[in-house]
Length: 330
Image (cartoon, rainbow, N blue to C red):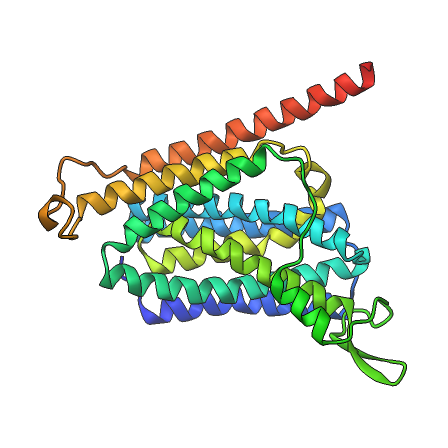
């Protein structure tokens, strides 16, 4: 897929402008968004993603369009999993509702920057080292196993990472939210960090961990850096609105971790099969490709992704409804 430099500039520049405009508006008017506001914004962002995918279909064909839609759906579902952690972080630090929107927006921008860096590194690694697909595949299967174990746990506590603990130990932090969305304030004549700064750090480090999972996953569906980047951008652009629109519904998606673990395992196996098909490691088949191993076509990947997400959502909602009825009858 050949993408002219001006297309990169126009498309990425336009999406960056939308993000900056969003940040500027939110920064001037911290508030709890209404359902109508979030629904309109989410519809707009999803519509943009669909139009982009149709544009890819028109200009580059169904293969690349399928790769974009498969990547976008996978990244979107992984981003929804992020929301569980975001909800826990917001509750852990008692973030006032009117400041949650800006905290999410800054966290999402951090995620975009981190993923942009990982995409660039991943693209270079794939072009230089075909064996990297073995590592990506094994990592996704390992991540899928960990996710499946999380799906069996009811633990929803947030444990601060080492960086957060280090910052809180080395720098004074106020517990008051009087400074709003400022990163630093003055308390008793001393400069201190605000809770908002700690929340941003928590969201940013969490985004870093999720990027380690999502980037190998999407490279298992498409090797086009342009499609990888745009799938990530569109998956994250509506995440803030989704947080406020279905915050309560997220708790009902009890099988989401299991569904995502199935997806990641499937993509991990797909990556390893692709690596075997293009093998050049001397200790595997004498450094020769194993032609008997097929590549999973993108249409099948798309069917599996949509099917797994649909079954996960239906089963989760059915389980939640059954539990609610059981509690009422108890």
